[in-house]
Amino acid sequence: MSSKLIAPSMLAADFGNLQRDTEMVNNSDADWFHIDVMDGHFVPNISYGMPVIAAIKKHATKPLDVHLMIEKPERYIEEFAKVGADIITVHHESTVHLHRTLTQIEDAGCKAGVVLNLTTPISVLEDILPKCYMVLLMSINPGFGGQKFEDMTYNRVKKLRKMITDQGLNTRIEIDGGVTDKNIQKLVEAGADVFVAGSHVFKSDNQTETIKQLKALANS
Ligand code: DX5
Ligand code: ZN
Image (tube, rainbow, N blue to C red; front, side):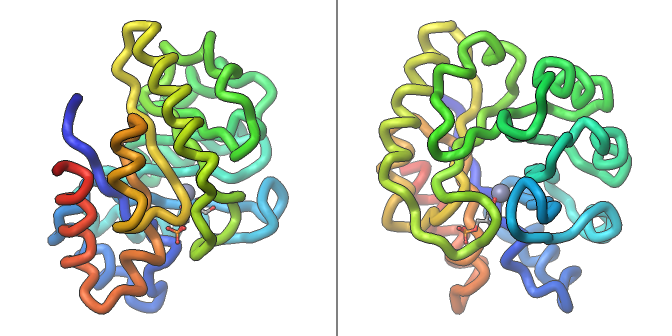
């Protein structure tokens, strides 16, 4: 398996110091920027959109992993690609024609991924899996940072890793929500390989060191 990746969630960054926090991620062991877009409909919260992503892109030296928590994401794929998304993930629960939406993401020049909410069965991915660069499994109810990791995630990761292996694929599994130094290794054992971390990184005293520690734990 390729190396395990860390994607700090910019939702937990200091928006008044976005350039500083972007550069912190640039100069750390992190691999991607995780960018959470919320519309106040699909999830109860509203975060940020294209202008903020463009501002991060201006300084970022690592790929932008854009997680769309919006209804009918197919309306905005080209715009997110234009402001610098490298990977775009859409919720299975948010788009009626998932295959078409993933094709739209690919046609816009980005890598395409699917996100599942906590209770959406893994089995819905069976036919779409070969088209996914990555699957993101939510380990919280989406909408807010700083929530408690749900233990049901471990079994879901195992189920999904088995499905990926059975199909002869090497799809990445990303985990989002409540990831810390306490659960990252157990998630690796279950078969996950990309880890979003918001509060655990940005609320720590030494953010660079926290990222370094997560990266080391995931790859040990
Ligand atoms: C929540 C977002 C997450 C969030 C994770 O809906 O998708 O990316 O920023 O934050 P933490 O790591 O604090 O749970
Ligand atoms: Zn996210």
